[in-house]
Image 1 (cartoon, one colour):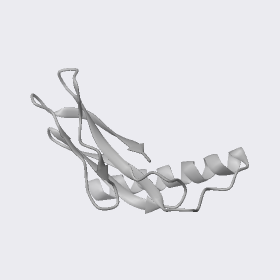
Image 2 (cartoon, one colour):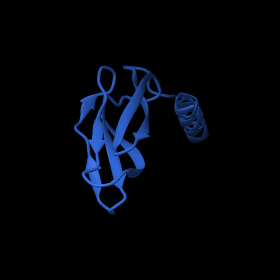
Image 3 (cartoon, one colour):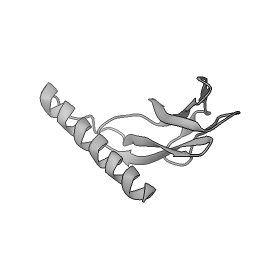
Image 4 (cartoon, one colour):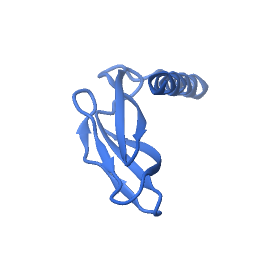
Length: 103
């Protein structure tokens, strides 16, 4: 069930990105494949889940866990095409997760 939810979010992200480039009247950059990513939450851990995407030039990703105690934990920057970033809350479960991208 989580895979379906993650794939649905990924589809929405791709559609939004494509719509943004269309609305701006600009062509999507095509020099190098970038990333489209989403966060997957499993208890205390947030993991980045990425797929190659030609609509941007992002290469690196990190996971961000929003913990129940109000703190945020940042995972390491990793190459999103070959690895996954993980951020783990020290106390209590993660109640939300996000990812950051950079070139």
